[in-house]
Length: 528
Image 1: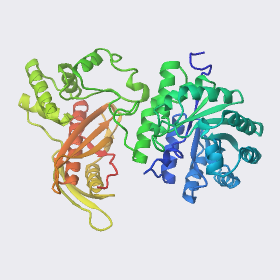
Image 2: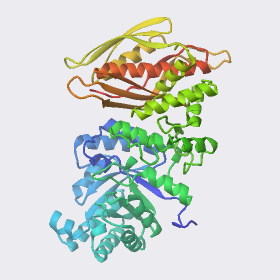
Image 3: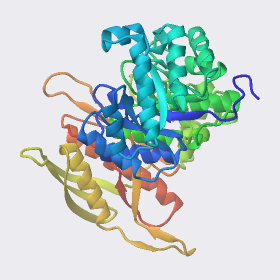
Image 4: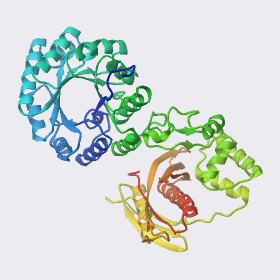
């Protein structure tokens, strides 16, 4: 027992592939749907709404791929209150349907031009039809938060009596508060298993989920990172971490939440807000000197839970608020030893750069340390020459790199000149890759896959000859670097930043392993 609900586990129904895809600008291919579905299943999501089978043949192909993948999750299709939608879902081999019927008078009379009695009768017929064909059925009363409660209760009871497995409270436009949600859900939960489908238009998405669970619901609909129409759906990662940390209620494997969020962001192209709970870049980042010092002494000092809980790592950010402890820790991460005088000078330079409104990257910090200590940088990877062309149907680029004492030339193609340039870099770095055995007998591969954590472009001057700054964050395992480069040519700035990041990262790697490194990066799909 816990103060929220008697349940030890709350099930999650993910609708990223259906309701999330209805977000303007998001369109998922069948391959995209399958990729996200695999991640959802690996995280332990209980039900995956794979799409809306009535939409198109391409949509049905995506649903079929997910349904035939052999996932542990129950795979469903959205179905409107018409028999043909259920037939389309059956063609896709899904396990069940999320049958949506109008609940509020606005939807019953104005949207579909029907009556309450006719909707109840149709719902019963459709539930019986779906269950007769072996489908799991959930009945959703669309706009239920604005429906007449007595009628909504009658509609949902009819669905359950006809054989539906559960009913769902739908706050379709995010118009309800937690008190109203609790009142409605308590009535529905007395009828049978009840789900919650909330939106965040009033910022009450998670709050209404908690109110509904306390009132007797046992399943939550949501999307990864909260993508969806208007202000979006409730974010399943926020529901999962809040239930785990505050109420000791299981949902999914929370250590896979960040990986799941990153995958959805990459596939959909929806950028993660930096201040987003769980998955935002700043969720476990610290710049303030006081906060950084406290966090270094005790990780729980300024964090509600350890970043490893959701599959992340703590990050110390340097800027004008940075203090000695933060700068010293950042230098230590790069295995750079400094004395007190050197540290004071580096801190001063960090603050000076931050005061000018600049982002202090790892490359900036290392350059400062090299200058203060009078060291020359020993580059392992360096860009010698770059040419790129975006004319015709296939953007191409060629690069000449110096890797150690060797020069490598390679070309690449991509969705744009930036993508082509970075592909050429990857090809050049892979050209000399070899596999071997370390002295301790373990396998060594010189072709190392790096993760491009972020790619960001800012114009820092105006006009047609504007100078742009490209910032990239690159990581491998628990090592990461941030680098920026500026140029009037976005392709050159991008490639320079990537090569510099690879060089900085390989320099760190070489401190841990005497083997030479030839690196390949996971590249962004950047078409500009």
